Amino acid sequence: MKSRKPLLSALTAAALLFASTLIAQDAPPPPPPPPPAPMSSPAPTERAAYPTPQGQVVVHSAAAPAPMIDPAPPFEQLSGGGKWITEDQAAAYLPLANDFLNASHNGRRVSKAQYDEWVKQLQ
Image 1 (spheres, helix red, strand yellow):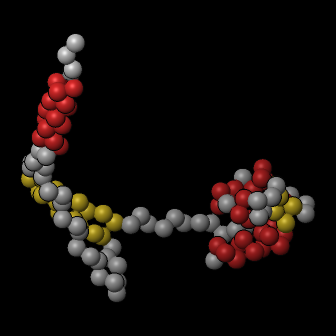
Image 2 (image 1 turned 30 degrees about the vertical axis):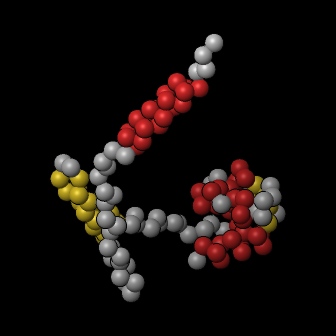
């Protein structure tokens, strides 16, 4: 019986050589990084240009406007006259409902002191 090691090593070498030619294909260079923004005052809009094979692409971006939040209602209104605000009651004021775990310190209800502390963080 003949040894097949020389045939196997020749096939392996050919496969590696072929794979290396596939990996070393010409790829377009990555786009240049956008110019740094000045540190003193952030620009309201940013503009970046990227060269592509089809032509230059210009990207304009701007920060989203800050959402308008209604003032927090009184504790008594949300609690229904009780000592606590439950998660169901917090649904009446969306910012509290979204931040209920933080306001309740991972609890199931919010006390008046916790609510007052949370309202101060909003301002």
